[in-house]
Length: 546
Image 1 (cartoon, one colour):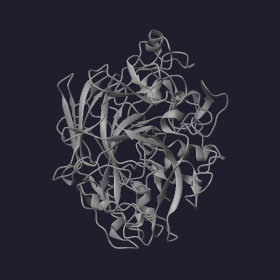
Image 2 (cartoon, rainbow, N blue to C red):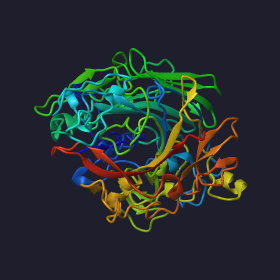
Image 3 (spheres, helix red, strand yellow):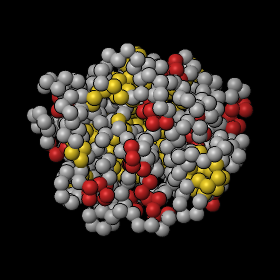
Image 4 (cartoon, helix red, strand yellow):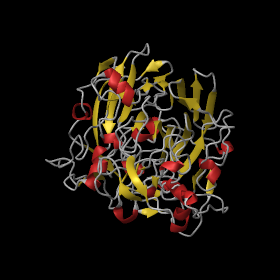
């Protein structure tokens, strides 16, 4: 089973802490696990469901992809980011008030493919072909052929992880188990997702260790002002403190702050830095063994669960369609992505269960995604009740006309809707990326909720590719698009509707025009000796206009 690569903030296993239960302990008896099979928003989206009974696991992630053939484009880049602000009108339980950022997303993030020799598709260095360790910052790691007889068959690909530098909005239930660090301020964390499966053989991490770290172990560390984690990041050694923001050490940011965000390799591992130009504060995190980061040793048999101290380095030198993560639902390497489709109103939460007992706005009956729910009394600022499981039927707040630019009257829009983030295209060595793409894993979500959407095929020349997968998805009243603006003094990307003031290009003005309507067939290693093709995404690629 392969996991979907996408991410956000919800550490679902920590729900046990809120309920007074006992989380799975690590090897030292102290570590709660992040269980990606429970749709934890912190996790990357994998290509196959890893949930119980084949249930959907993952998130809806509309993304910007950036491509460049320049050396360093796959491992060193700088962005400028303006954090979005909430509107003056507070949200209300009936869904008729304002819309805050935490209702649209639990996180947005900057991503990059990473080396992890303990991760899929060849964890532990084992392979049906030649043993291929990961060489950091090198395109020698590109193995993107669907031909099993090729020396560059994707099944021979070095073990791969995916990093996401995630930003979490304020105002609702606090971490853990919610998705806000503070009542009014933002925070950020460096997360690195691995996948403990040999996709060539079908072997997985032993069941005892999966109970501790899951099949998709996640290194997690809040960005701190000192650059030193305030608790152990590795999945084997993590504690409840790992997922609890610490205002005395962590970097907190205000809505509207202007930031410079950089990711680059070092001798000790990936360095992520956030410079807040508005407040003058800075924070960083390095994915190094010295900081407590570690891989989970791939052990398909026995009961061992061993942390391997590890410096996580970027995998590739450049960024292209070939610099993939071979177990992820998305096709990207260098990317900026929003994580939407989580918040839904719930008018009553069943005591002790975190399940919705009374559906809220946009729903008339309870359904399968009314889970991971919190009452208004748990909120840090905005007293509304809701659920943040994956919105698999596209009826939550993210799929309504609740985004900036969805009301033609800008005054009314600004009263009810948040501002968009503003993010520039990345620069590597001071130079831009020549090409970019729009990508959404909409078919990945649809296939588990809309039976006519067919994701799997044996023949890539199928005359009816991705039959039944539609854009926008069935059930959605709206799907957000990216557009460009020059209001910040330079070209920047924003997200929402087509009516954001200062917009310079809407790329067709709707999701079908922007992301496309023909599903993208991606191929993956398979234990039957040949590749498998899966329709995971809609994607369009063009020259970078920004």
